[in-house]
Length: 163
Image (cartoon, rainbow, N blue to C red; front, top):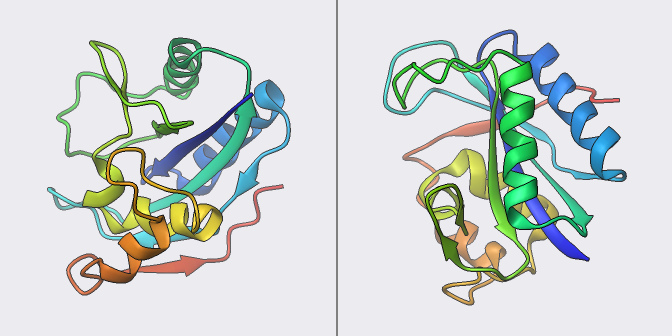
């Protein structure tokens, strides 16, 4: 079994899209560890605020199978792949970690750079995996979050029931 972490984000019909994605992951992978939902302003463009969270689960699937499943869920939720990178999203599912695998291929990059670049990824990841280590730096996520410049990317927890 491999422990996997996935970031989930939306700023279009946020609650419905996040719930749909979490439900799809639960149905496919079973029990999930789920962080709180965090709200933050968009990065790189002006628009509605995002809701973000991170989920963790164990799987026997390959990294490519997990990536393909996430892509499929995004497609079912009408993710606009023609939109610019920094734009509104119905749903964004990013494979953050696949065990301690370090891989950069045409279809998958793990660990994702987003982990150390964005508060809306690192904060929820730290909430559910504080003592896990970044596969490249070897540092615990709690340490990375402690040192993160939180004033640069403010975010706050919001009450969004996901069950």
